[in-house]
Image: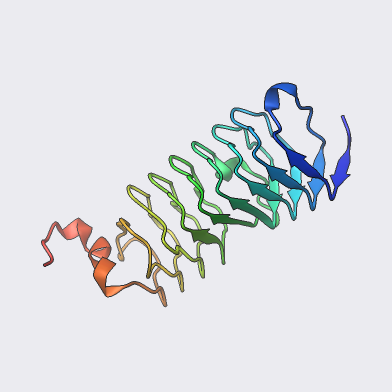
Length: 188
């Protein structure tokens, strides 16, 4: 197994015929299938993933430091099993349904144009994060730090202001009903 790979482009990787290195730095992965892959303990620094499928991959002790995901399928990922040190990701046009960020520290994370259905953000720190055009249907926000988070263009969120920290968070008037769901009232 190679120890470290730097500044390489990988296209059309399939986990069935790929042996992973211990770390990747400034690498680009495109149109690759990592679904059900064992990415345990692998370090990704300043990497980009485009049009990749990482669904149900094992992320135990995996490290993502300043990694960008664009147009990726990432269903059922347990990011809370990742290495927490310097964890930093950005998402654009991804499908992240049924994943978990439970208890993670994710300040200033961009969740743009992505589907985050039934994602668990419980006990996470999402301060200053941006949910631009994010679909948050069934997403769980419980004891979540959302200070200065931007939900102005997010859809289908439901969160309880009494059980989350929202100081300075931004919401649009059209979607404000997501803050009142627990009261089971009708807003017209």
